[in-house]
Length: 423
Image (tube, rainbow, N blue to C red; front, side, top):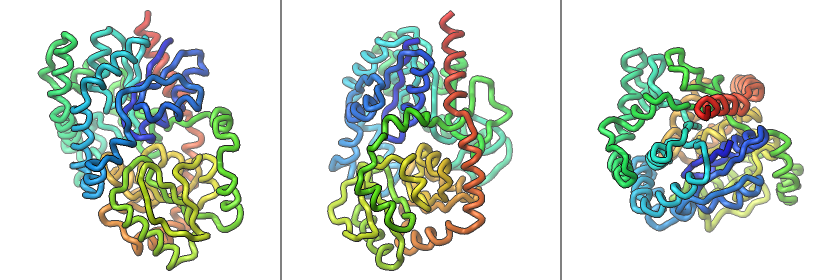
């Protein structure tokens, strides 16, 4: 099969697709990943063909407007900014999607690409499967949507998903129908999510059932598969000797550090984080491995107990850390728990608060929204999270996640779905 994978957003949105692409390629399929052009080297570093989509996610986040909005620490404004950028660049963006999809026979997409990809798939009569790395937004009576977990009973739970789906449709409706008209397709009078669901499109949530069990009232085309993890041999080959020697030496010469990193989430108030790091180094004896990700820092403290990097190989480095402090992205959460680290989630927006509340509820860690973060709270959290009870829970969930076959499950579902529609 000739399969195209489409994602638009941060490195965390992309990374699980590396695992999926490698797994599909191992089964003999031709796979191309399409994402913004700044991820070209990252994807091709795994020997996966790359087809760029218009735009540069890191540049967008670090633009003057992007930084101003990030500094507001307002998740609604940040989401609006993101969709405004997509709207303003829609013409070259659509063209890049159309060119990429024209080169493949089958399509794997996610929520952020759905308005454009679904229209092209329909126009070109190509089958599409959906994949997500966030808590489910498929209606169920068993539990409410994460952001609406004030109550928990069947009719209310189902209502929370309908509210979220309507909100999503309100945001994307005009651009979706504008493009459908451009392609000569019918304008949608119903929610795009309902329209696609009626077609029984394969809908995979690639997260651990140990964290969120699959609801019994879902239809068969909705599945929770388990996290997608790059196979060990592929991961080792790619990252062989890529951990810098100075970081290796620093890790080996001292107590296990606290890992702190916020990935591709732009931090507008870098001074706040710099101050927190300085206070931790001053008030405690903790060693800190700090990953800047996409954020731009000018005056980070210099200290022998602080090591600063842009990114690190989680699978090599996390086993040598004792606590993980991060934004709450699902991919990083999977890596943390797989390596049995108690976690502190500093949530920014979208699904991150949901993961934060979930790890607190399961006694796997502590949740602190970014707006409420200060040095004293983080120091207390680092101390409290190392309790025997939390470590025991983290070790148990880590064993469960390592035993899951998320990648294998996802590939099997995708192959069966596309094969059935290729006949």
